Each structure stands twice: as structure tokens, then as C-alpha cells.
Length: 222
Image (cartoon, rainbow, N blue to C red; front, side, top):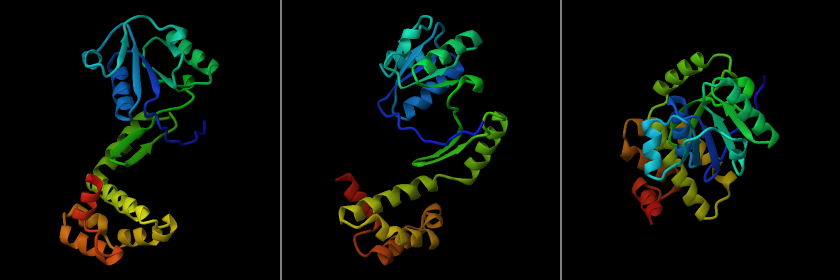
């Protein structure tokens, strides 16, 4: 199977998880982190899911799955240990041209979930196309060591700079070279080592006055 890599915007989309054990709980957590509206259908409910329901963060129906449950759903994730039920979920979803993932059963999926390294706006996705989840997990751990929290700060700063330039009606292509200069001159390493004075000097040298860290942070907060 050759998969087509894609990042989905599921902000405020209705997503359904069938199954409320440890796997289903992990799937719910990931969906919530991406801004989805999450519903769960399950007979057994984990304490975490129960707490999320009590806090009105998710919808919860403690009963068996029914085909009608897919009405108005953007994507569905099956997280049960019942293969016949998983197939029913997948079959119902395919009939509706819906995105469907069944945990640990790639034959019942029209998309698969990669292992993820998340550093703020930096998302690294690792997939073995379902051939070896264990190896994908190892690669994720290796990359987590390589890509530290400085990448979160770096992308946040780059985003603030870009926003200010666009507000000044700069064309995106016009400042592409300037961003490349920041990278080439070691901005990421400066952030990692917390060399704020050098960062400000580099920003002023590249963009001019008004692009110091304090000025960029001030504009974002206003």
C-alpha cells in the first residue's frame, strides 16, 4: 500500500471514537488536542473519558455502536478488540465515503495514523505504512531527542516576524530570502542557547528596528 501523506484540519469537526479503553482514550486525547468535537460510544468507559464527559469536553454514549451513529461525522476511529464490530464500523464508513481508522487493523482503514513528534507548530510524522509500528515508535523516540523545545520557540518567532511583515504589505516571496538568512546565520542555535541579545541584533540587522523580540511579543499581545 502506498499512502498519500496529508495533514487534516479537524478544528470543530465532529469526530467519533468507538471504544473507551486505553487505546480509545489515547485517540480521544489526540483528537481533542487538534480541536475536534469528540463523541465516544462504548460499553466500558475509562476514568479519563468519564472525567472528560463530566467536564463537558466530550460527548459520551455508554451503549453498543449503531450504524446511525455515523450521521454528521467527519471521521471515525474504531478502538475496540472486537474484529466483527470493527469491520462493521469500517463498512458503514466506506458506504458514506467517510474517513475511517481502525486501531491496529490497517486492512480496515482508509487512512492510518503516524507516530508523531510535536514541537509546537512543528509536527514530524513517522509512518511505516503499517508494516512495523514498533519501528515507527523507535524513530519517534530518536527524533524527540534530536528536536528539542527550541524548535517551538523558533517557529513561534518566525511566525511573529512573518505576521508583522505581511501587515506591512510585504509580498511573501520578497522575504523568503530574509528567512533563509536567519536560518543560515544560526537563529535556531541562538534560541537553544538563550542568546537573546544576539537574536535581537540579528533581527535588527536583517529587518531593521522594531523587530526585536520584545516588540514582536508586544504586537502579538495587542
